[in-house]
Image (cartoon, rainbow, N blue to C red; front, top):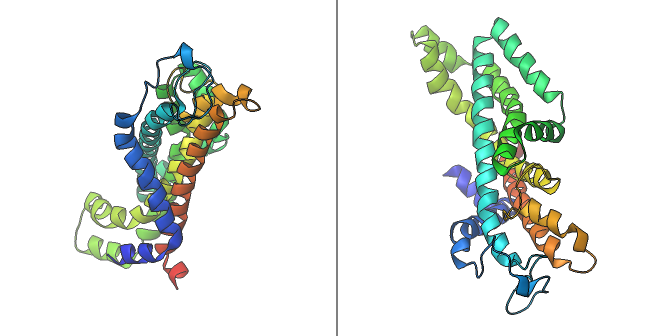
Length: 275
């Protein structure tokens, strides 16, 4: 309740919530109101500018841009949420185990983590997506593989800090098992920074997914994915600007909304920032 009160007073947080809510509603109900099919070409409406019939114009196959953006919002939310849940789940588990067990297990797990962190995430995702063959599903797998080390490092640092606290020592003195101490006392207290990181990563992973689709390693035509739409319209920027501009604006606002909310949550949940 206190966190929500602080969130309501934070202009940046409320702006982020409004933007995210807009895209969430669009993802849930937007496709039901799409005026045209997002994947069916219409040779009678090729490269039409925005008009009353096609509010955001059409692309080089005659498909309606507005309909494709509405369907693409569902793909964007599903893609970003899937990556964050998979990468966050794997990374958090690795970090918790490494920090709690310590010793040789900590060394092994963290050296594996360092190996993944040594490569730029986009380059590594491109390599994995190319090996798995280009598709939206394989792009999500590739990005998840490159993003889990971030959560592993963060979770490990939280566990190392928390397992020496007085309440954990008191639990040990009371005879509680290691598993109970970890799940009942350490994990709940380590979740806040992980949640903030996940919020910030929602926009970041969408950018990488859109980037992979843009260069041909992600979603394939005629999938209404925003990065793919920008790629399809890049050759028409000087003449039919609307093909790439509107999906690019959708990506911009989506990422901006989660960045606003993530930055605000980081300030709200940090007692030093509140003071």
